[in-house]
Length: 298
Length: 192
Image (cartoon, rainbow over all chains, first blue to last red; front, side):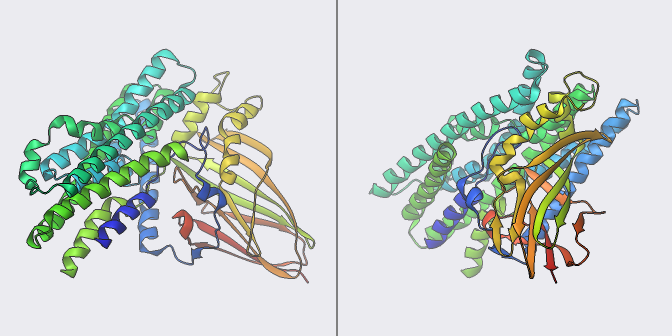
């Protein structure tokens, strides 16, 4: 059980969702009061991989900028390259922290959701996260043409608040269910039964909580395309990016689902399934409640 | 059983194990001035990627001439720079093992060249030094919103008194508390 607690704690520690520091927002207290003497002389394997991923993203973004130049010069076959690069950018971009992976992972850890449905939920979360940028930016361009960035920041902040309120509510819902399960004397339903009982409606808040926050990465591509006078190409590229993000988050969700199933099968063999289900659900609920509270209090 | 527990842990942490989430890519250059009495200042230059540069242009190029004029620089400073005070201007400086808190910056300037926005600013330090010691400078964003890389050519220049012996090194390190792995500039000085 210690391991599950550690997993939950790590989930909390690595949660990171922030605004654009150039325009608004404040870092958390830790960042302000940090003591940078706590360091090692090597970035380690994790750091090396992380830096490589950033460099790839940087390179892809530069390439997309170059492709837009070519498209502007009427070399229309570069549209294909721009779309492919955007798809790849979406895949890599969604690997980083945020994008609803914490919410989805916690939900999947808490609820026995089938792998297929988990993948679908992940895909929709990633896809809608980038697509909401498209909606927000397009509306801002139509209504407030001259101050896209400021209005985007404002809309994004409001939607992020709503998202975290939803995340908190999901956490409370899961924790309450866990308490019911742990106190119940009845045998818990088998995972298969849970799957059939899980309505599409109960998974919707998870997708919405990730999807309504417009992705700044997608917004930047849209603003860039708009300033180049190629907004339609921008829309196509962000759609491709959405597909890439959906793909990554779908695969991530599948990995968590497999992890959950491994845990379930180990627990059922040891005849402790009710406790394990309850603890999984409680851990997921607590992670989401803390994530939500942390957002509103820091 | 150990393997299964490891698999469980690995799969659960998979979505969290890679942090590569920047939305803004910045190349940075550092210039420091040091004399026999003090570390005088640190000058920073940031060059933004083209896409983020376009967001700055779309917001602050008020006369729509496709660049940032001198009249628009104060607008850029107010709208897309001053908030960085909250983040210590993303610069993390240690002088002989002690953190130097950046309270203000001077001489802010912005320009648009080669389709990219650059910011230039100076951090007044005026910290007394003597004998030998080490200054470290790392530019990073603990929120992962921005990715900073030092320019491949001329990332560091040092304006110094002839008598001072300087050794400099740039190395990627890991700052544990911020979960970041920035390039750290390490300057060892020796004042005769």
